[in-house]
Length: 158
Image (cartoon, rainbow, N blue to C red; front, side, top):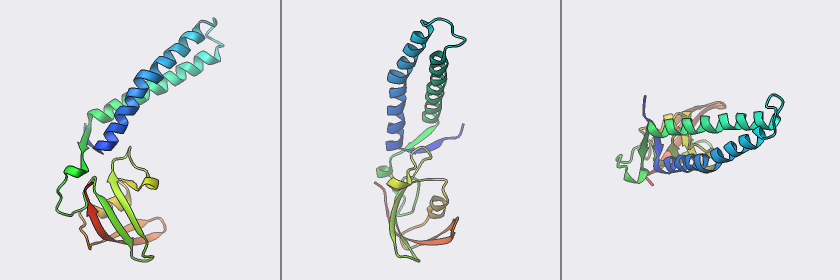
């Protein structure tokens, strides 16, 4: 299995979710199934079917997270020394060459991406265009609305 890059913060977030699923969600589902079973005939018991469906979701998510964590390559951006180049985990300050708008993104793993928080997926078009660039370089991004050009203003490892 190939390794999946993830930041230290992203790995911690997955571990917290896994812990919650195992200690809160799983016991609650087991309790709900037991209560539904106590009601008698399971063939027409909507609560039982719902609880079993939720159990399938919880167990599937637990397996998914455990798989991701076992294949994860945890990267702490503050430990990086990429010589000013944009790499996974780097925080990049950009300026749109057309509008002059300043934006800041951190390049993270798939599970951590949240554009509203400035976290972009490593496989997104903008992240792929930024990888390997240095301060002063121009990244050309093929966006749905056409080509966008960004100047790399700063690269930080935080």
